[in-house]
Length: 80
Length: 183
Image (cartoon, each protein chain N blue to C red):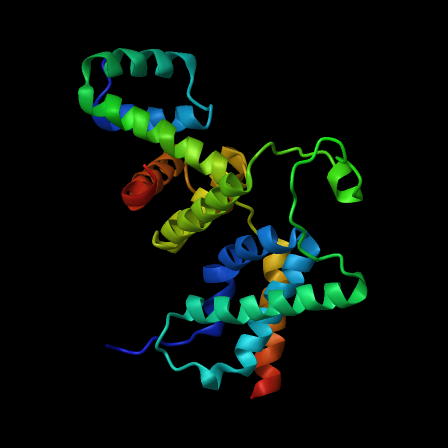
């Protein structure tokens, strides 16, 4: 039943992506109750998730990146 | 100080997302942003010999991109003044006279909020750039693009528990990196 700190941190991360199982979450809660360090970690992790959500980062799709790559490649071969 | 070197093969992996984010808030159109970024890469290639290595590669690319964005505004402006900047003073009597004012404000954010979030986005990407390449790619896939665990595991041939270790490490370094300004 007992979770090590390393494991607890991993479950924390999983929970941020909503992929921690019920038992895992239960064990995490128990651990957080006793462990100050992991508790801090848990809250920081939550804060990070909020920041990530707030930032609305958009990435280029892999096709878009491929298109960039091709353009650069054509550009270099023309240049040399 | 050693001069910064230039390395076009790595540009897309290193800077595409950063440049793209920088552009999209300014032009608000995905396709246009893509065009501007690829134009920037091409201009960069053509003027590589002007790169003195005083600034970092990315700073240099951003300075090219800025000029591209300004050119884009000018082109738009000369077409029909769509990009003209209007001062808005709240006036309940006349509200809605301009077509632009009738467009619903979906975000309910003030301009300051938006600016801050934009800066935050770039700061996060900055920190992501400091991770190693595999970590950064996996982190972005999982967190920003929301790709599911199984797909990523298959693509990189890693186990789920491996994936979580990578994500966990990435998040820890990110938090550390962002700590000074954003926590």
